[in-house]
Length: 252
Image 1 (cartoon, helix red, strand yellow):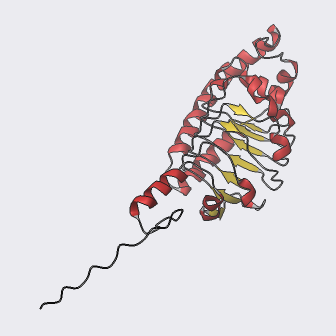
Image 2 (cartoon, helix red, strand yellow):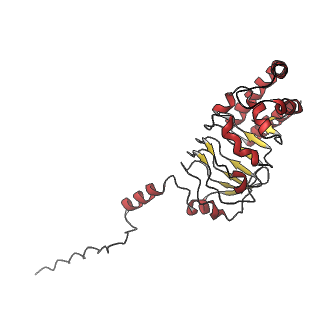
Image 3 (cartoon, one colour):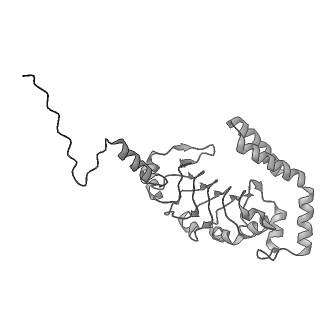
């Protein structure tokens, strides 16, 4: 009689175990981990020296909703780049004394934790371009960041508030650059006399601010054009040339 090979027994799956070779299982596990800033993601993300010689951790475009688990960085980085995620609150940081720059453009940030200065005590640069901060009062936690000298709030509703620049400079008198535009001594003087948001400066200050805005309208227009061009640049050489022109315009 012809022998028919017996079929191997079906694998037994023990209760509580996971069959790692199952594609369906892998897809589910991957989906479950999506949008989480895990220690594994941190260790596998790009780590590089930026053009400003900052040792940077690149966490761009992971659909992250919450800042968490950054203790896994072991305080090794000068800069953390969280651009292009879905973060709504600027919080969840452990104490990271080495971090000098935080890049968090193109998110949904609406709130800033009151203890940001305690968690990032040496923060110098904060790029919050294209987020959802709507009121000057929401920036109050930044007042405790005594080393913060570079801030961008372009594309946030708060940047449309009347006398916005003066209010921000009043809150952060040490700022050197706001929205990629140098903070001038004239702005500092006006900011020192500006009232709480909604009150506004005196009529003389308002006239001075209006004259300054009128005199520099063409420069402001050109700065805006350069910022858009930098955002859309496709090469490092192009970015460098545009930034040099912007810097020259700011110092003019």
